[in-house]
Amino acid sequence: MTKTYQVEVDGLAPVSAADRTGLTRALEQLEVPGRDFLVLSRAEEDYAQAYQHGPEDWQIEYREGSAERHYQTTEHQSREQTERLLWGWISADPDWQEEVTWRRLSAEDLAGSEEE
Image (cartoon, rainbow, N blue to C red):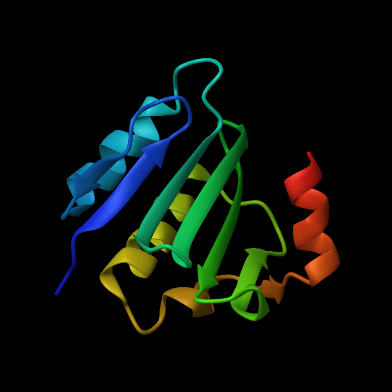
């Protein structure tokens, strides 16, 4: 069963969603020039995010409660794969993480991304 999640698209106010249509609409909002990322959250330290480098060039991260459980895809993904992975995270599909390779981000990685 899918739980309600929060969606924040670059430059737009956060909204609540409870189905895949909400995710699809959020990703469509990134087709507007100047909008590059979205964040999905279930709690303050429980979120997934995607950054669009190009139409078929996405970087995905997720965090499960603490900096020690913050991961990023090792390769960029297509838009279709990004939606599948994010929906897997939202719906708590037990196999969603197995579709790609992830690396745990170190404290140095996270500190560097906050400075940008």
